[in-house]
Amino acid sequence: MNALNRILTTREPFGPADSESVFEAGLAGVDQLFDRSNLIYAQAISASRPTYIIGRKGAGKTAFLFGSTMSNSVRALRTATVYQWMASVIRRWTEVRGPLFVDQAADIWEAVFEQVALFHVHDTAQENDPVNELQDVWDHLDRTEHTDATKITERFLAELQRRIADRDLIGLNEIIGDVSHGGVTFDQARRAMRVILRKRQQPLVIVMDNLEDLHARLPELRDVLSGMFRCVGRVILGNDAFGVQICLPSELFDQIHEISTAPEKDFRGSYLTIYWTAKELLRLADNRLGLYLRSHHPEEYEGLLKKAAAREEPQLLRAALPPRMISGLGAEEDPLAYLLRHTQLLPRHLIEILNSVFTAPVDGSVPWAVTEEAIRRGTRRAERMVVNGIFAAHQASFPLAREALVRLSDRLGICFAAKDLHRVFNREGIRKATGMEFGEFLPMLFTLGALGVRFDETARYNKAHFQYTFDSNLTTEEDTDFLCFHPLFTRYLHERSLPRLRGKNAKATYPHGCDPADEDYRVSLGYTAMAMRG
Image (cartoon, rainbow, N blue to C red):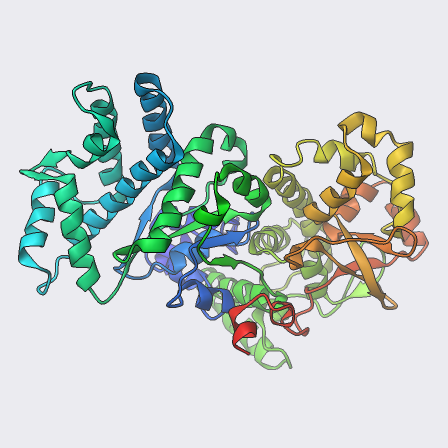
């Protein structure tokens, strides 16, 4: 529990919003923070492991990638380090020997993955491994300290850079394959490695996380990524010694496909796109609240447990919140509904909001008995941070999104006729300011999750579909549909007009999928393996 105290703190009782910080801490016990009982995790570790884990920023790609590595047969590479070294090697080749073709870059990537496989064999030698082949691997790696897969690849790529400048070496095959240590060449060692791994029961999987700032580095990493994709395509097609698993951001997936020179070859592998349900998010948050209170406030934790047990829904989170609250629009609603509808069904959003709510400096509000005012003030404080994160995630695709969206401020209601958006677009000069046509502007708003399409309404809410719950693009009929701003963007765009909207009894937006009582929309839409099995 002491290790968790360094993660679940009084400043962040639900932990850091990003999983990377948790895993980089390397602390024992952090596995307790992550939910292993959900459908996404089951697919991530299935026998047919997905090659690519796709998800939006904050979807928990890292958690599912590294959470599924609780096995001696999984090796993780530090993505930023390997990308940097690969970029240096490709740049060195170009300077000394001319352009490097995609298939050649893929050869280097394959050698990198094989270095990891050599390290794995060396690190996990077994009694029934073929003796001669195991000796070849040991001899080839004997010069190095075998502590870290990434360090092994760094040393290899550094040596490759030196060999590229050696004019006596002809061609990439010789530069890579003839690297010799302990009297054993790399070609001999990798042949031995394949013999060993093919005989083992548990296959090796090499995993690479997504880069948080990939959107900003995409242009300079084009050659690195195109080579990696080609290599992964090869591994999927004909490699029975090891597999690979890579995280990629869904916000950049269209551009990533464009980087690939032959998508039909490079993206042969299976995909796991991460979609969360409200029920799964609540279970994650409930678990973290329990861990925090049990460690920092044990007496209050016991009291909250009893309070939760007496309820129809025995959740700590619900027991810590008031039974009802008044929203910023003046409507009474369930606090959990209020919190969930301010997310785009992403763990990062909910954790950022809950950290802000449960630490809000409001008199009388404590983590085991949060007040209405703390919920309103904490959510408001977190909204801008979450919205800024959404803009940052889409920066590469929509660099002028913020400028375009701000021009809608206080110009429309929370829910409005679709045709009104086109009029405001023209009146506010958005085309001139951004260079975007309306046919680009509206899809951008759908992609950001700023706008959704209304499909139903109740006395309290306008229910809307948002694109982030679908694997296809939203469309709208301008003459008949109504559009709704997402709750995250309501105060961002209606700060001055909020009192007027409250006076008119404007309805809040209730995004599809954020009701814990609803059926699993992933199953009903056919996005999961469970649906396919059914």
